[in-house]
Length: 306
Image (cartoon, rainbow, N blue to C red; front, side, top):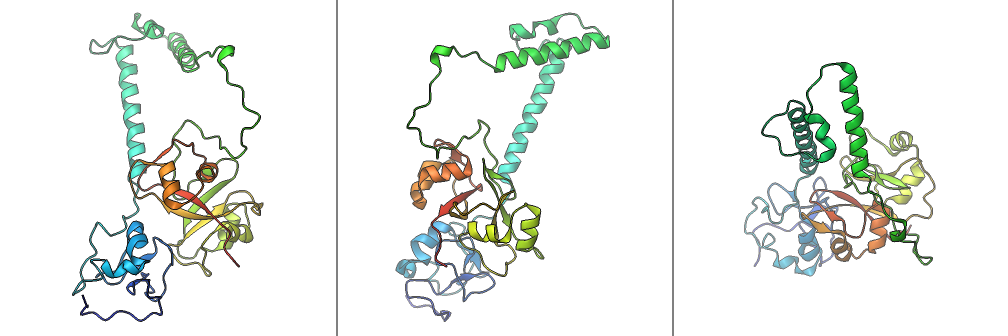
């Protein structure tokens, strides 16, 4: 079906949708799925979902795209539009922490004042059911017993006969993630022994500013970025090594934002054709980690040709 709107002439290959381009520069585009590629067929132009770019915009099949066949410009459908960045995941974590803190406070004061609605307590908290005394010494004694009992309960004793000895053939690339679910967000350290920051460029910022702020060098920043433009554009994503310039043995990295909720890291590695162990290593995650929509991770890529 032919369109009433004239296709832009930007010298793109026939396999690329002629309406694909950067928001501020329709004649320029990324030849791989990127959060910077926008659809200029829509009005207003909007960033296209990465999966749609992969299946249509960057393929000869772009002619089968329903947006391409439009007779007149209109808003890009939500099913195709790239989801806006937000702090929903951070908000969820903050809410969880707040709820736990409030609930813990209710339990503590309920125990202290012997409220009838409180559930039966573990044996190690039975000292709270004693008559309440108001002396400072008694309060300090209660605090000491509470902290000691908590530590003992959270530190189980493992018989020495059940300890697993490490194998001599164990690979050195396996990361050592913590038991705490890491925060995978912009401007938050990602990794373990070597850490990185994924930063969105603001107006007036430069590579020299980043190098000084994070104790690294301009050369190191350039070396670890798979796709870096010069000069920097506002809102461009830059990956910055923290407190190191020794990056010659590292791959280049691409920042990737998770599109779907509850995505196993194994599935993402297959989808992006990246070795699972490398994603685990540089993001300090285990093989069973579940990613959440909106989180950011580092995707190692082969060194690009100079």
